[in-house]
Image (cartoon, rainbow, N blue to C red; front, side, top):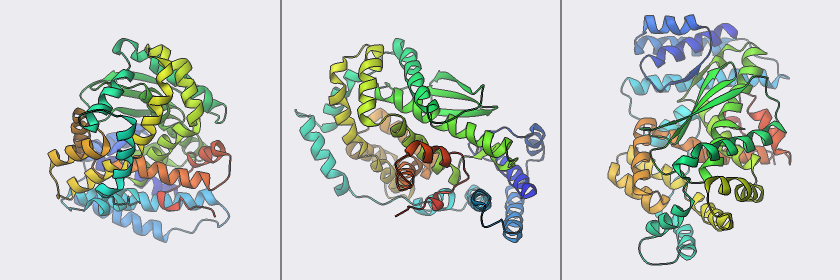
Length: 403
């Protein structure tokens, strides 16, 4: 399997020569990357090699039935390679509908929603935010009270990171020397990004193009850092690459099933680290004062935000309709404003994200829901199950629910 795993890594690096977003992280032998850059294999050659590797994986000796991680490894490599083949096919011109694409790349399909599915939540928000004018305007006026001032941003983020890290380290053992650096950037289609560097280090970038609200401090600190992407990548590097020598975990192909697990655990990890009552208490005591905001308003704010969170699948629906060609970019942004309560600038930014990352959007909300159902079906110790999941090569389709 190790020989086949090396071939997989080299194919991922080869695809990265044609798709700048494909290789999200690589910390394997530098000469493999240099060789990929020098060769720049044509896409048809990559496709042919991937097909041959698929046959070799299918013919490889079966793993022991009693070694779950070995079984998961074999399934992981097989499905990741199928996803790579689908991405290469897209790069050579194959057009897939939204659901076809998400299934091919991410091993999952998001449910379809209509306007009626969001009507009840919007009605509740109408009563929570009374007044004249469109609901989005009232929501933006309400939310404007909770913007982190630019000059306090770093202080608030550092406090949020400290809170997320201390809670994570109570339950998950990380190798010595792990750390990350935070940078503030502009001109991106995303709000935050973790660039994993290897050697247990990450670079986390926070986009400051749009106002950053106080709830995003915990969201981003947990999602990008602890116990989210940073911890996920650190544990894969430590437990699978270094301890077991599984070279496939020296590379992260962004458009692959791994991303649903990565984004799903990063989003669910926020709730694991900060259950709602504890989060509101922490924000009221620590983050609201650090941001210069009135702590007395914390509970009302999170009551509203809990309702808005129920509109998250509106983003998937906008992407599905837009990418399937039933609406244009403007209509997709309008849909996000009306049914997702995105501000117009944020809706336009989200459409740019969809242009760049396409059906990747399902990994955030569907991924979170699938991870939550999987972990919560396995017993009351969410931290233990969370730690096991982010240390394993489990696929979205293997997130089976225990009854």
